Image (cartoon, rainbow, N blue to C red; front, side):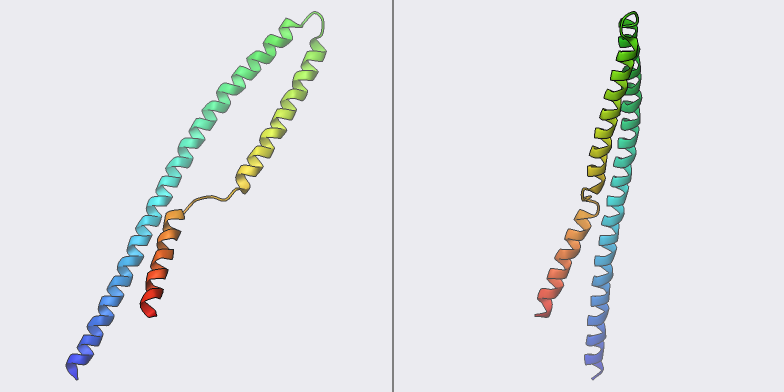
Length: 127
């Protein structure tokens, strides 16, 4: 009888050890995905800030060039037209940004897929 209970306890210990190993592996995968996502977002932020700065400077200099070019004849019309153009472009970019924010993120995609595999394997073992 003692051998049966030690066999049962050994089996339970192995099961708990296996479950702990699975959870540990999945948490490590989750931590890696979080780290990758943070680095990617930081890199994207820096690139986008630099791009916005360069585009802003280019847009400012181009606007000044156009206004100076038409200074004698139509400076107010050019300023009004460029103002409307920039407003429309800003609204379009805001709409694009809204669509991007509402799109589904693939964050934790690998972790969710691995957990689904684990669930299937554990479910197959009970049948």
